[in-house]
Amino acid sequence: ASALKKLISTLKEQPELLNEPSLAFFKDYLTSLGATIPAAKAAHTHGHDSAHDSHEHKHGSGCCAHEHESHDHGHDSHSHGHGHDKEQHGSEDEEEEPEEEDPELMAPDSDPPAEVGVAAGGEVSDADMDKAGEMKMAAAEAASGGDYAKAVECYTSVLKLMPSPLVFAKRGDCFLKLKKPNAAIRDCDKALESNPDSAKALKVRGMAKRYLGDYEAAQKDLALAQRIDYDDAVDGIQRFVIKRCADRQARAVKQKAKEAERAAKAAARRREEARREYEKQKEEEAAGGGGMPGGM
Image (cartoon, rainbow, N blue to C red; front, side, top):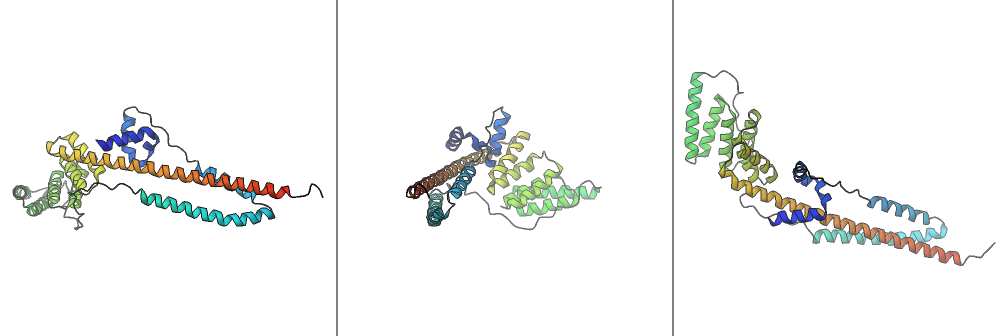
């Protein structure tokens, strides 16, 4: 809740941050409610710097001015280096706030994809239907006893005989229990190809993505699954995922604000340096012109 308050507070001060890609989901939500999103501000720094560069170049013409330009070039390089040093130190001193550790994250699995069986829609014999029914019962019994590896084997046998979205989703659930989130996602993807409204596949895939730390994608799957078929057991995971997404967005907005502030300060320093250099050149030219005779 505190992270969400920080996000809203920052957006009140800098509403143009809603145009950042990382906040696209929040911008879409506000737009759907009839809100008007302010346009992104155009960057003017380049134009000012170009104008100053052009102005300095004009005053650098002439033999006397050439000596000053040559001398001042080293000075500019020296100042430019220090400016970068300040910006680099600033970046190091204000590193992005680290994300709170998630002790339940799973290591990504890299096993070869499991067998997916034959294409659905073909003729199934009575014997195959009976065999598939037996394997489904065996898979359910193995899963209820905590033998998820055995359940995966049984569901694979079913898929070879009678592939279906529900069986893919159930095998994906067993893969997730075995801490193989990528395998679970592949099976759920396969299930959703045939049935995009499979709440079981959406729930399992959403939880797999949650355990991989992909909270934004997890929230999309879990939210859709809950709309299709609400499940109390998923509610706690969904609340956790929503909080993680809000925390990430709050940190992203805070970091963007810091970067914008550093960029603004750097641009102001450059403009001030250019102004001082311009004034210095005017004084030197005036001093050099004052000693010249009035006529030939």
